[in-house]
Length: 441
Image (cartoon, rainbow, N blue to C red; front, side, top):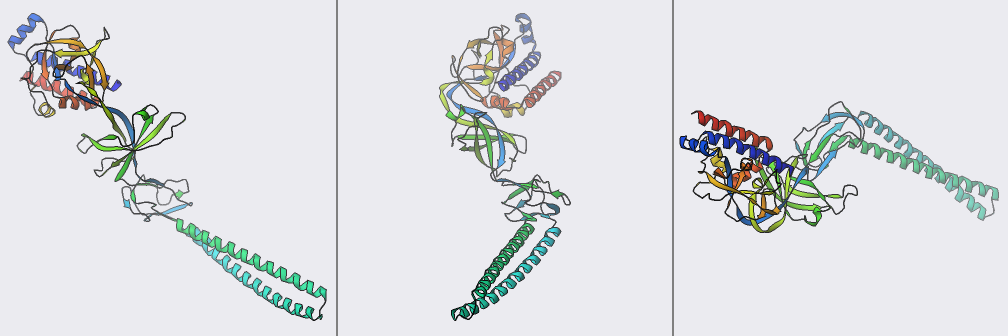
């Protein structure tokens, strides 16, 4: 509501400027009439209409890649080569960064030499074992013929067990050396850091000559064609917002105009944060236009239903009297349809102020707000087709019973309510300058 309050203040300010310039530009008869009856303010109005109000909740969304990966080295080393730049597209498995391999290559050579030594020691132990095993068989044959002593048999059995242990030790040392060789080879292969997924690289932090370790972020890789927008849902929102509901993601195009990308809620985490009592929803968005970028904060509207049928008015038409605290709208009761409503194109395509009606009776009517959307209110207390003032209510709050009215289209009201604060103020000042120039002609 703070946004709407600020917007309404700016719109009221615009009404003041329009009223001043319009009154200054009247002909002599109108001036005489004003001198007799007082200043007649100029306001803007739109026709109320009947319909259902879309129920919309506005969120701030965080844009992320569908598959977004931070690239870290798995080993420490000095960066020797960088193969890609920010914005390059890479396929899964493409080389990204290479670390210096000099030390790793020497370690691999040493490990391979140790493996050769272990293999030689194993062969030596096996040969010794085979020799003792043959001697053991000969002694056992002599024992069967009672041609040898028991001590000699015990001695050869002990030698055989020792030789067998030597073989097992040599095999273990061989396996250990072989494992170390595989480890060195794997480390050497990790010196070339490859893309784990296909996507676009960015956030480069890799420079030739820098020392990198396992905590050094080198690149960020993500699929920019399919993005997701993350929004935070409170515990209360989960009763209204569900997977599959329509979502509109707003982003500025190359001309600076805000456009809406249509999507829907794809996933909602069922687990709430124990501290904030909130959870996260994800919206998958097709980014073929390329307007979205990971890391952006974007407005997101979630449409979760419609209100009952009611009379609809723009939010800017609602006015609260600061003295009485009563909320309502000002009606231009006798305004006809002979004045064509101002549209966005007619407002921007001409340097002449839009036509104002003759002095028209206006009255304040209290209303009840039944439902509220982002741009409209569903109200009770007025009928469809009645003209409600959307700009200049402060001028009427002083007790004036007449006003000159410029009729506006709903299209134009939406365009004004969608403007950023700075854009709206700039447009108001341009309107004032344009009116002043016309007065001087």
